[in-house]
Amino acid sequence: MAVILCYGDSNTHGTKPLKEVGKLERHGPGSRWPDVMAAILGVDHTVISEGLPGRTTVHDDIIEGGMRNGLTVLPAILHSHCPIDLMVLMLGTNDLKNRFSVTAFEIARSLERLIVTTRSEIDVKDILLVAPVPVKEVGVQANAFAGAEARQAGLTEHIAAAAERQGCGYLDAGQHVAVSDVDGIHWDVDAHHNFGAVMAQAVEARL
Image (cartoon, rainbow, N blue to C red; front, side, top):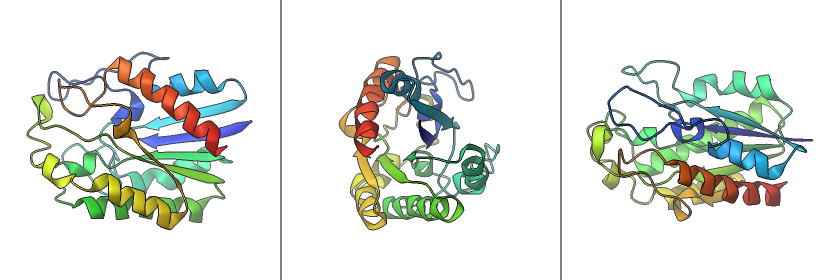
């Protein structure tokens, strides 16, 4: 039985597009993309969804709190779920928040840090690096992500280069789904279903 760990942020968690600041709602079980993927892959695969709203690659969030630094908690999560056949890594969206002031290149390098850390902690068989969907500066998230559209220029290319350097698989989520116009960050339920189907095919190919 293959074990697949999906390590991500609110779009792996299944957070609905936000209409009010700080009021998070979640798509129901079965409608989040890891659940959709798991249903398609079937009982011979165990899909573990580790998505935390607000999770960054390597940055502490002193405003939101809640252990959102993806590097800090990664070792514990890896050892909790090992052995792992495939790790799906999709982070970087929250790094685009204005408070972190990092470039697209730095986000890609931070993802490489997570890959190197993963391999140093456990003997993971494979890693699929997923470039997040481009954000829009709209709705209640516009202030937090002020300037993000400019900062994300070149991000997919930098992440693709990072995947090549690290010998990982690569997928560009933005080629398959788009963010909701409600908040410019999160996905509606149709996007989750579509992406789950795409990821099932991509994961099957890696395994």
